Image (tube, rainbow, N blue to C red; front, top):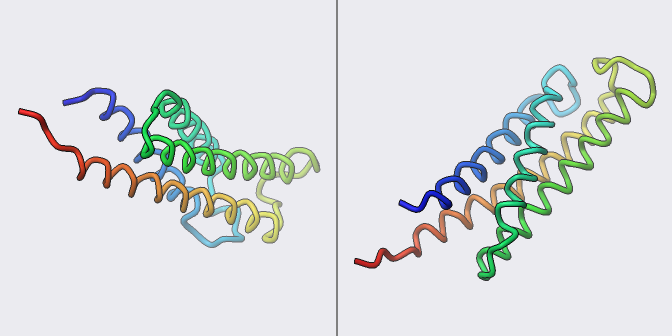
Length: 132
């Protein structure tokens, strides 16, 4: 068993599940979206990007690209969440449905990129041939 592949697989799946958990719920309702889960998704996606930086294969390049897309979209969603809750001086539960739907829409785009990354990981695993 390749420990590096296990760690990478763990973080790719964790990134996708955290992102899915964040976007689940009514899109414009702030009570359905936990900001700590958004921040955890951001951190884990950045870890996935760092884990893929040294890979020189075509599949590694696609993993890196999908992870970068997810990380950038989640970072923008996080910045928008902070802007809506802190910069305007309002409580987090007073976020407008329009602003909340923008944050969740960005996170949904990141979820799509995470799904692509998971599919790539499954394809890479299925194509792996064990040398005996």
